[in-house]
Length: 101
Image (cartoon, rainbow, N blue to C red; front, top):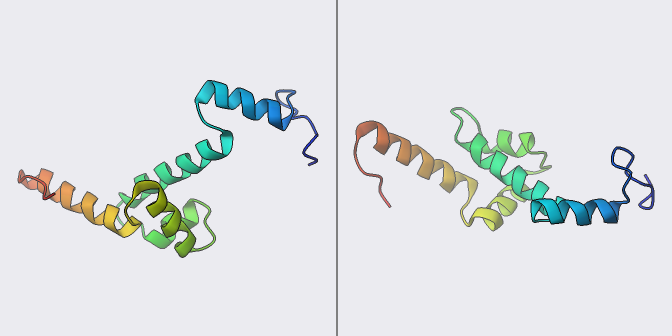
């Protein structure tokens, strides 16, 4: 599709769509999509039996390395660390012991 071709469903150019999206949502479409992917990944990592490889694939990353770098850049921790924290917090809440910081 040519960059100048109007977006058919809303009859807007890419620029006009991006501007309107940013106005309504508060961030450009590409940033919104990137954050949505990372939030989806974080939720998937909490699923029992889901591997980091599986999460990377589910979130459309071509490599685990690229996924891990993007995840750490977004959340400040690696996917594995988030999983460990989540598991530890779940165990603490189930046993009524306080979570370890």
